[in-house]
Image (tube, rainbow, N blue to C red; front, side, top):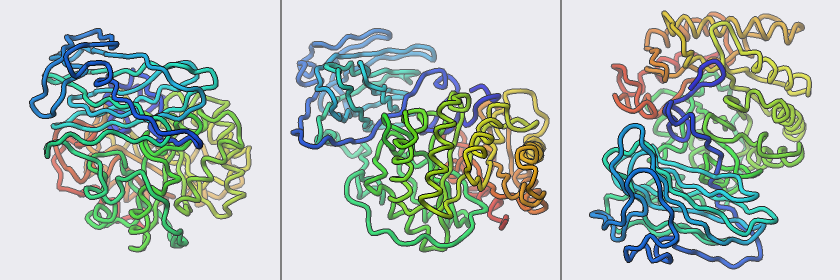
Length: 505
């Protein structure tokens, strides 16, 4: 991922490897419900005669596709083939839908980088995908049709298969419908309430209680879309942490969605947030990220955007919100101005709400587009708590990632001084946050434990507003492997968290 304008290639939903960054991933996966419509569920394989060995209405291209019996799951693959590191394959089917109607699309898939999505007039492609792993995994996404939409094309797309990939039980559900049942085998992971305290998208939020009046000087990011769903209380305790930043709320159309899967209005994950608060900490909820569409780009009016932000703040009684703005979002002036106006309105509705902007950075400071995002917020009257810079993935020769992070912090502080000339030096440092990527970055630069100690010492000297890192699950795994889940350096589990936890503000 080009570092000059982006970062976090290994992050986000759940892992974007550099090759996948070239693919356009629109946000998706809200199990929306349209009132007054009967539930309808259609298995796009079985109803097409696919189970009996016919491709039926499915059109396939790319690597070899065939209808074969699965040794793990009773049924057959919709998409199957042994491919190399540059091959892709896709099967698609066009199905009739109703206008102005919410649909849920789900499938059981096996293999690495298998996408599920739908396209059509008036529909934003809600692509969701899996970074792979053993066994079967369920993908679930959602979309709402436009006023003239009468059909959509559902597709399964395989990318970088590792010896084969496949899909079964591709189910399109109308309003009120749900995903298919899991495959009848213990080797198929199932996102159920029994396997994770916050994996169920259904149910009403529990009664809200006031969040604690605590500061969050250290709040590492947690990819809430990782599988299995992270257990926040356990991770915080193991890393000596009090507070966390939860990633990411994206959009399905102009509707808030947890990382293309769950509706925040349902209170998904609130039990986990309550547990962090009960232990004396708090959470930030982060909107946006590298692989999702931030709501400001999806909502066309300030009022509609405010309503979505407001719904999330109310659902979790938030005191802290973060906006991770990168990629195309950084240069979207209209969306950035819309966000700024909505955030000013949000702070009026929720006095004391603290807002942070998380932006790309170089050692020389924020990009010109990043500075414009901060200026837009300032001019709209947003009281910014922190400008958090993503000190990672510079994509250029670098001698020391620790030095680069410190230089980026100093440069950002100096830029803020030009934007906020009336603020004192101490106030400007308190507005500066730094978020490195642990271990190996996507550009193969390395941020190690000594670099973390260096940043903590710098933060103590200047009293920075926030330290964070991407990402706590990677720190916990302490492994060698794919960058979305491993740091690829020698470390003990939670070693970085314990270093960052030494900072108290």
